[in-house]
Every structure is written in structure tokens, then in C-alpha cells.
Length: 114
Image (tube, rainbow, N blue to C red; front, top):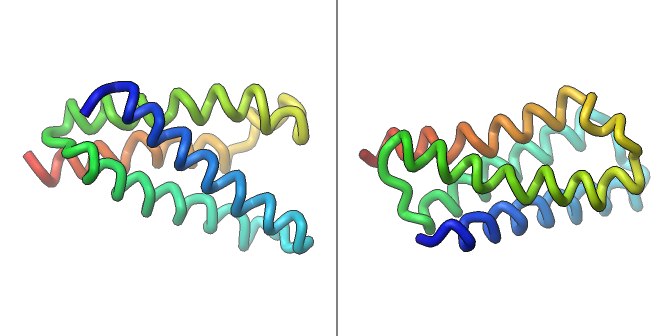
């Protein structure tokens, strides 16, 4: 699987989370008890699915795939999300948990499928 496709998968994961959180905001259901786990569940589920689609084999390939998933998330958060939240977004612990999950999920998938 090409690097560009994996970066595209990362953008799809980011978009899915962005839409889900936007819906919560529209419904005024922005409690951290709802929004944080929802974002993490989407990250884990789509991260696992796209790791499988990318045919990740081995821990090193999993780490690389995870990093390629994080790149568009960081860029899109910088250019899109910070327009609504400000740069304080990058100081929020829950965002960094999401980035870590984007790396750890494909890594674990690769470790499992050596």
C-alpha cells in the first residue's frame, strides 16, 4: 500500500471524528464523557480497519502506518480545527491521546500480524 493512500486514510479518520464531534456540538451534547470516548472509539475502529486494508505486517510497518495516519490529522487540526478552538487545542491532553491511538492501533495490528 502506498504512503499516499495511508495518508489519505488518516485524513478519512480525521474527517469522521470531525463530523461526529460537529454533530455533538450541534446537538449541544459536548460533555467530555461523551465526546472524548466517541473520538477514541472512532480512532480505534477506523485505525484498525485501515491498518487491515493497508495490509500492515510487522511492528515497524505498523509504526510507519500510524505516523502516516497522524500526519494529516496534525495538519488538518492546525488548519481547520484551530479556527474554531484556537491554538489551545494542541495543549489538550485528549487530542494527544487520539494521536497516540492513531500510532498505537496500527502498530498493535502489525505486531499481531507478523
